[in-house]
Every structure is written in structure tokens, then in C-alpha cells.
Image 1 (tube, helix red, strand yellow):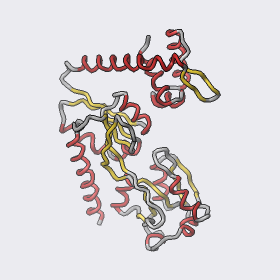
Image 2: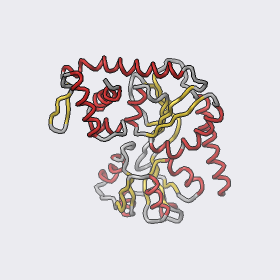
Image 3: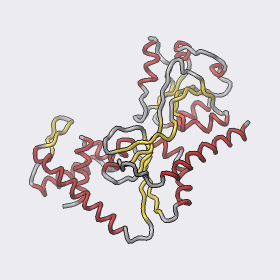
Image 4: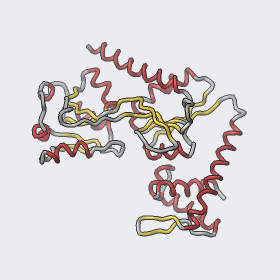
Length: 303
């Protein structure tokens, strides 16, 4: 019996989807299906029933879950025990896409310098995947959006609120009490990503019964930001990706707090450890302060 097949089974159970399990394991859906079929053959039992595009666990599938969990747990404990003799302890850090791109490259070299006895492993993934990896003990700590689970603890660490930004010289830069009607006439770029609830942005136009002028709809933050920098449009973007540009003055934030407030944060998330602080906790807090100081220094240099 292959441990990969059992892990595939548990991913499908947790995510209730072959497709989502494939994405979480960075595999193709046919590979996941093949692993499940092989496992079912070895167990001589059908684990899932296919219902249209959906799946449900069979009674035998439900009965196999605690055994699968025990096998995976024993395997992970064995790996950890074998590594115990090594001089270097390994820590696996996960982060969602935006944190991976804008904060982790700054922070992880510092953590590495301050902890020479640690071996760092880094994983970039979606929030849903990170949650599962934390619960499966495949990731020690993760930087991600807020999640609710009795087995996890969250600590708010980085502001990532959604801001309306324009290029310097745009008329909105000096306009006060911007109305939805005026905003709707401007060419907009919308960054679509499952990590943020863009329904809030759409809602301000719906409530006022106006149609926004969406010129561009993209799925990459840097593309959206570049379009605004090129003066092709304006847009709502998360703070982490525009913080440097705001402080350097290459982008300008427009106050729309009277229309909409989308407060979002990045959280440090780990398994519930009671009062015990996660590994690297002090170093993480210090790196966040240094990160913020670094941007303040950039702002002073640009002024």
C-alpha cells in the first residue's frame, strides 16, 4: 500500500473534490483518480460514489478514514524521528501568494541568518491548501488570511486592506468626497483572486444602480498594478502589493472610506499549541518591524 495513495484519499476527503485535491497536491486530476482506484483495488472496496460532477464517501470510505489518518500520522512521526539525529532541525513555512511575493523575500533571509541551526523549507500555496497542510502537519507555520478552525491559532500581523489607487496627477488625487457615479465613469482594472472578497467592491456600484467601467480584468497583481502605473486605468488593490509605490509616490491612494472599507490582514497561523508560542515568533515580529521601517526609509528618501 502506497502512502501517496492514502494521502490522495485524505485530500479528497477533506476537500470533497478530486479536482481540488489535485491542485492541493500539485498533481493532475487523472493522477489523483488513478491513485484512488489503486487504493480501492488494494482494499477491495469502493471508497467514493460518483454522483454527476460530485462525490460522496461510501460507508466503507468513512470507516477507512481513521486508519488512513493513523497511517499518515505514523509515517510523519517516523520521518521526524529519523531527522532527529541530524544537526539541523527543519522548519516548513507556508505563505499565500501575495505574502510570498511581497513579504517573504524580505523576511526569510533574516530568519535564516538568525537561526543557523534551522533548515528552512518554503511553500507558496492558496489559503485552502495551506490550511490543509497545517492540519496535516506538513507545514509548521503559515502566512495567510484568517481561518476558523478549532485546531488552529491565528495572529494578526500584516495590514493588507484593499485601497483605491490612481497614478500621480489623476483628478481624483485632489477630489474630496468622491461619489460612486463619478468613480463608475473612470476606466477600472479589477484583480480577480479567490483570496479576496471582491463582491464588496462590486456592491458599491450595485447599491447605487450604476455599472462600473471595467476596462481590464486580470488575475495577476503585478499586471493590474502596471496598468495603473501606465496611466491606463485606476483600481482597487491590496495594500501589500502597492505599499512601496504609495510611499515612493508613484501611486496615490484615494480616500473612499465614506463609500467602502475592506479591512484585510495577513495572519500567522499554526497548530493550536495552548500558551506555547510558535517557533521563530520573536524573529517574525522583529522582521515585520524591520519590513515596515524599510518602507519608511524608502519614503523619506523619495521625499
